[in-house]
Image 1 (cartoon, one colour):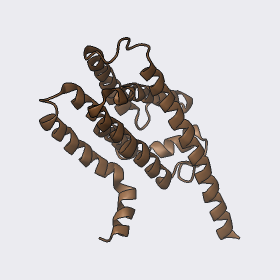
Image 2 (cartoon, rainbow, N blue to C red):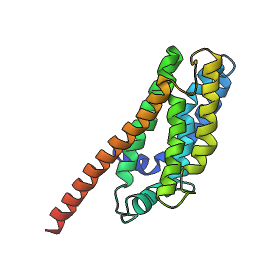
Image 3 (cartoon, rainbow, N blue to C red):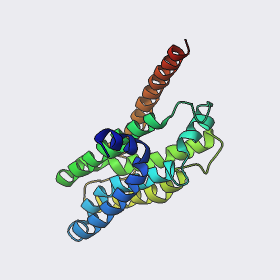
Length: 209
């Protein structure tokens, strides 16, 4: 398999690869990090746990992109706002790059990772809002968001409180930052998707004419 062939394969199969990576990382962290530092273990779990969430969204049961296109954007499920390319880049940047960087940074400076559990909790709430707006509460991603994101977020915040890194878990700057990051992610993703769809429409019109 050439590099180009592998890239094409990975763009389609990244959520399946993410499941394998997440299982490996969880076992690795449980063996290497957990015995030495529980808080670091919790923080570093953020990336592999989100990869499990992505598996829920895009593989089993899968269909999150179709849900967003049909129920939220009111477009054709297969040719709407979200396509394979857009889903790939949004998840690569946010989940495979940004979250691991901040979780690793948190090992050296825990202050840099405190917003992560709040971000995850708000992500689960966003899924609930999407379910209400899209009139389909049980949709791809919501089960893992509430069974993984919420418990992990609450547990990690509790550890941060016990460690003295958070004084008031119910109201602090990192809570606001986690909320702001969710808002920023939605705005940036929305902007990129609009540009993406506009470019696709332009290319399609050029081919037709």
